[in-house]
Length: 468
Image (cartoon, rainbow, N blue to C red; front, side):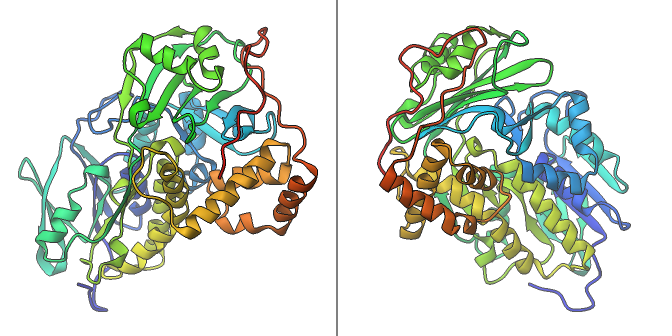
């Protein structure tokens, strides 16, 4: 399915989907005389607002530090644009974060992130992408079929009958991608698919929080195999906060307001509920339950059609709770941009797919291994994955007891700034051994959540430790 050396360079690109993955791909392809047509099935709103094609749009979104760096490469100055639009910049070290083995170090410098609503995020990035040379965003255009065109090119046919010629088709249509069907129609098979689904559900409500009331930059009570439930509260634009409850299997949060708040109060620590208690609700509760991890192993197909490339959730989709999807999509955009700048030609997609597979390996390992620990998931981690998971939790235990190196290591991994080899630092092994011999030391204290209020009765600095 490759092309020969006479294959012309990419001149016409069609990107399917104007979500953040599609916009990153469009930014990657823009310039150098290329025309880039973005086809979006939804009618895009003239101002930030939820839309059908982004069912998770009412849930919290943060841009991990690695994602912010990648997005800046694709759209220089986008961070400032997002801040001017209202995005809240905060350091993850300023979050009150309760993990499985205790609270993370508080008020320590880690990595800056941006917190904002998904509609504002997409709207701001869309405005920048629309202004790029050669980019044409066409909303209300649903890609219906893919067929061979002339001279090895492709033709994308929309539901309205429009035909778009392309040297490269980038599929950024998300979890509902029709690429497996199109591949089967081409006689190539759809390839291996790996799935890990903890049947996690989210429920989110927007609140107004009086200024100067909440001490931390945000609050996270992490879901654990013991509790099966968690919650978070994060500030977004216009002095609002998004408060989310999450749970898996039979512990998923309800959509009614009273049940939602009762769910938060029943968490192992009432930190998120304390935020709600001083806040005023602005919206109803919005739920989202399409959260399974799914990885298409397209890079393993023996034959691959020249001029087709999946990105974002159409390639690898993650449980959104880990906040990786947008960061990975931006990094995929950088890989595609660099390949085009290096003279990449259609017919060499397998090499590019392998690059993308390596890029997604770490976030997939993080998300899938954590979800496999939940009783609501089917399956279990492999031996190596289980060993790495156990060691990661040991390093996390060190961090929860004041080990600064362990905290930096886990924070760097969370933000995708380093690879898993950083966990093999001999100094971490020595620290773990010494903590088992002499004791781990004092746990990090529970941060004060609401100013002027003491630590809630019945809470402790460290929750019961689970084995493994």
